[in-house]
Structure formats: structure tokens, C-alpha cells
Length: 181
Image 1 (cartoon, rainbow, N blue to C red):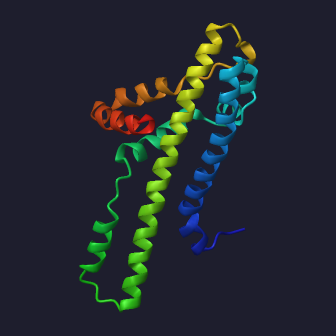
Image 2: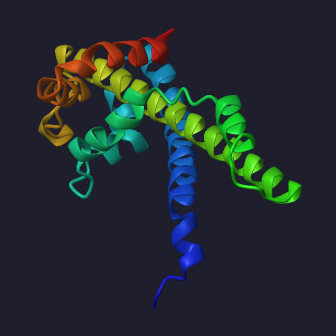
Image 3: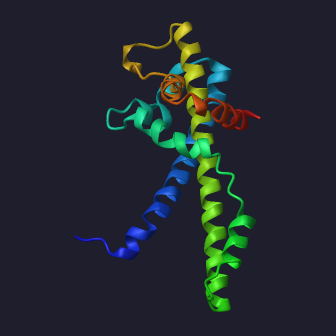
């Protein structure tokens, strides 16, 4: 079965929206379980969370996920919608008013989609950070076992990525600061 050109053009949009939906589902499940964990200190509640199962799956290369998300985070997705619109309006291309209006609408929609995707990546990283902290706490309380797997914390992958490009350190700190404040 071959993909039509139109389908390929919308694939990044579909992937972005699917990622945003997935993060929202993971967030609801994890936050509920985190609240119960804080009351009971029972790690098994979090062991069975969708996030923990997904991150511990051998089918998901978590390191690749972090590596693929880093460029988006480093851009911080501070796209200026007004600048994009102004550039379109000032373009030398003499389009009809309806063509120009549709281009402006698409520019605004794409900028908003990119911004929401960045917010979802920040939220995803924040959830993984939270899960890693709680897992470390549960480990110190002796509640984890070999069944919990040996996934490295997200900070290990971020440090590894930053070691390759030290110029990204300051921008990443700003983004991660935005995750929590």
C-alpha cells in the first residue's frame, strides 16, 4: 500500500498530535498514582503505571526518545507567531487576499502546534524526572527489585547529550527551569 502525497504532508502533524495525546494520558495515570504513592509509600502502584511500563519496555529505545526531543527543547519553541505572520504579509509573492489569509492561518496553526509540542515534551521530561526521583526513593526504602529493570534515569541521557555539545547547557537549563516553575 502506498501513501498518498497528502498523507505524507500531514504525517508530522499527526505525529505531533499523537505525542501530545500520549503525554496527556501518561500524565493523568502517573499523577494519580503519585498521589497514592505519597500517601502509602507503596512502589507497586508506580511500578504498574503506564509510564513506568512504557519506559521499561525493550521495544522503546528511551535514549533515542530523549535524543530526538532535545533539539525541540533547545529551540524552546518560542516561535513568534506575529513575526511569522508579518513575514508572510511582507513577502514579495503577490497572492490573492484569500490565499494570503490561508497562508497566515496555516502559519499561526503551525506555530501553535510547535509550541504545544514543546510544552508536551517539557511535560514528558518532567514526568520522567518525577518518576525517577520516586523510584530512587523507593529503592532506598528497599521496595524495588530486579523485576523493576535497570533503566537509567533521564538525567544520565541528558548529561550524555550535553557532553557532546556544551553550548546547549545554558539553554537546556532554562527549558528545564520552565518545567518546574
